[in-house]
Image (cartoon, rainbow, N blue to C red; front, side, top):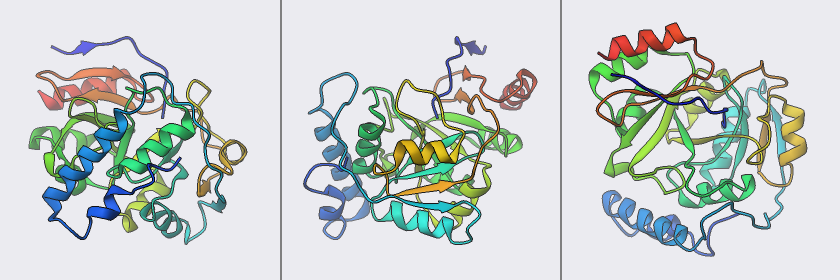
Length: 269
């Protein structure tokens, strides 16, 4: 049985003085380091009160690069690998994000967006190998998902403990993740080998952005890099299907047609 929920509209600051990732990266084995980083993220998250995050966002120098620039993907990868935040085009909307496995990046995106706590961000991965590395997904589910690509479909999956995500990204061990068919994102993951936060590039509660010039107007001084791809086609965002429970659950239709979602569910059965 497939559970249908009422469709919702699409929603596509530096951390503490100490950077726990930097502190632990040379001192502990990877598995231990991931547990320590997750604890640090959870401890910091618990310091916030429930509600919308409203902080004074420290101004930064923002560079703008055209998506058509052959070096755009490399420049974006350099920014996020150094802990920075980027605004970038996807196959649906403009997104904002940083490295998903770094709690400082997720917290900073929350501050920039004034995001309500308890609403985790989705993430992008580059390919099936990266998806399997960080999430539990059966071969049948992976085969069905592969048939849907490059359509915009986000899956809610349970994460593997070896790739523990910060609380701004994962809730109750579940994370929304997709492989983006966007041309720029595909180029980015040729360079970047880590999951990327993918939240709609807007201030929470405002309209989603389809214009590079609007992205520059709103986020200049708040993020390190904006990748401008001009005006994107109208979009309702990706469809979202949860595979974290016993039965698939359609959370949002997004840009997919009912028949496309029906095919996906049949392939899962």
